[in-house]
Amino acid sequence: MQVKTLILTLCLIAPLTAMAQTSTPRETTRLERGQAHVQRMEDRAKADGVVTKGERARLTQAENVESRRIRRQKHDRQTDFNHNGVRDGVEARAARSR
Image 1 (spheres, rainbow, N blue to C red):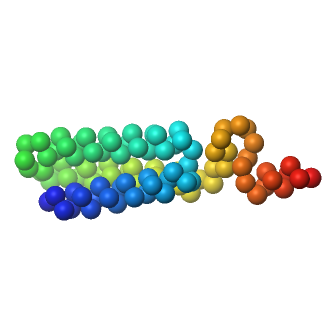
Image 2: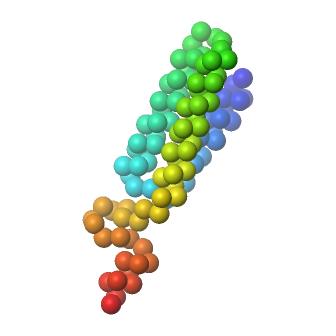
Image 3: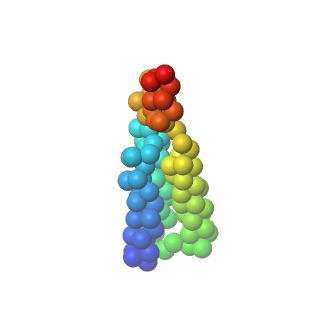
């Protein structure tokens, strides 16, 4: 059971390391908070030594929700990383050079 938990945790944390390159600091913080929430749920479920079928289903659902959130933020093509109101990217550079 611990190996499964470790694998699930790594699968959920690995995308967060990629998020540092593709998301804003606020998004990264929010996603990390969501991951911490799932981890607390898992800790509570394991507290009595047995993870029931219902607890496992709830954990799986929470992990799936967080995974979808990570993917959505990773691929949202957001480009104003420094929040200065100017798009950071190819379009912005082209517009400034005109």
